[in-house]
Length: 223
Length: 83
Image 1 (spheres, each protein chain N blue to C red):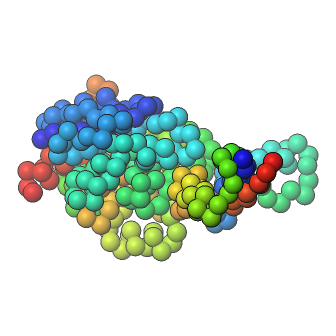
Image 2 (image 1 turned 90 degrees about the vertical axis):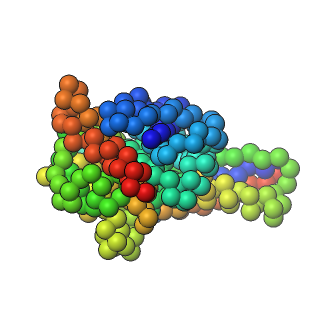
């Protein structure tokens, strides 16, 4: 199982994402933003960071990177794609997911261990969890406030496409406490918190994040 | 040569924490009567030759697909010819 991790100029969490893939039992494949080549991977992760310095808008320039044309086409064909933090912003800018991520309501950059509830466990990236399971993973963002119009929010809720919600504290003002969403098919998932930082007891608050990476390996075995 | 100015603003219904912070600062500085502040972006673009219909259409694509995110922002495009 080959899982590609894209490095953009300004990506920070590509190494951690690759490490999480290996700990889950997959083979991590480095992908480069400037190459229109997915190297025949079975899934793609767009990692966190500040691609292109967040210039213009977070993810706005990355969307036009040569690798993204391939990612968008493959995602529309069913390839599992997970966008974490900046990766989530890139997925929204690419219109693979609806809505947008805007500046935190209170203006502060937040870095904390965040409790989440997994709301939907039918996606390629959440099937290792139980529906309703509560997990704790790190969260770190300055522009993580998920917004969309009411019709889009109602559609997301109605189709069980909110995959994770903030519990106890809404850290950034996201509408309806949304931490992550998926597309209709369930292969594309965007998540603001960082499961790749919660995969080892030595470095993470928990190992709750590992499930995202084992999920995609499960979904490939079962498909 | 022509100069094109594109103003990008958050849609009215989208919360603007930066504008709100500026408004709060104005209050603390003693400027009374400021009832709202919205912060946006301005792009000043220079292009070769005259602004043809084709060029104008291209500029709208640039503004609508790159400079602004239509999910959360609106834009206004103003062409200043023959500077």
